[in-house]
Length: 194
Image 1 (tube, helix red, strand yellow):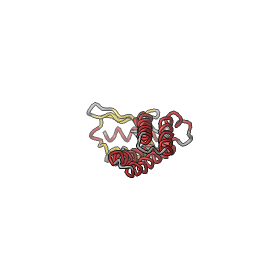
Image 2 (image 1 turned 90 degrees about the vertical axis):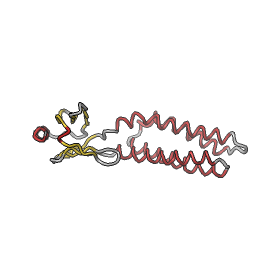
Image 3 (image 1 turned 60 degrees about the horizontal axis):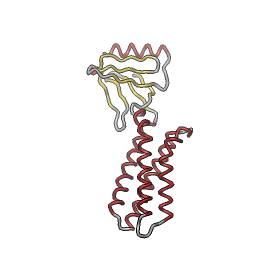
Image 4 (image 1 turned 120 degrees about the horizontal axis):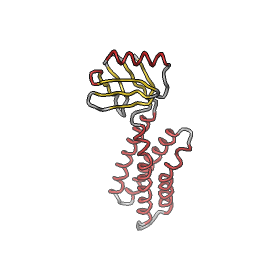
């Protein structure tokens, strides 16, 4: 049995969507600020607060790379966004705007799910190769790929390439490269199983 530390397969897709998701939340907060400002009795403190938080959410993707621990900063930003959505819904409920409050609750729950999935994606991921197949991490439960589904499996440089019989190729990037002897033993094991 071999266990390899890899970059999570969904990490690249999440990193591409990160600026878009923070931008959408920032625009939502700016719309909330406009809604509060245009109310019958505007609450200037909350309007200013939502405006500043909206700008911070819009600017976060541009400054996020400067943090030493980027995944932790991203998760903290998501938790703050969830908290603001859920507590902001209380303001709209108290001002007889149940539709806006309900939308903020739904968006807060969705952002909570996104925060949890991003937390899982940015955690160290391990794949496992054994006699039954290859276990690859996913967002929820690990996926087991049977040896009978594969044409070839090869470890070269820092990439483990899985060539499926369905003409699909999956390349997983290793974080820690095994020693040359262990790499050769892993490749021999994979050839013997196919």
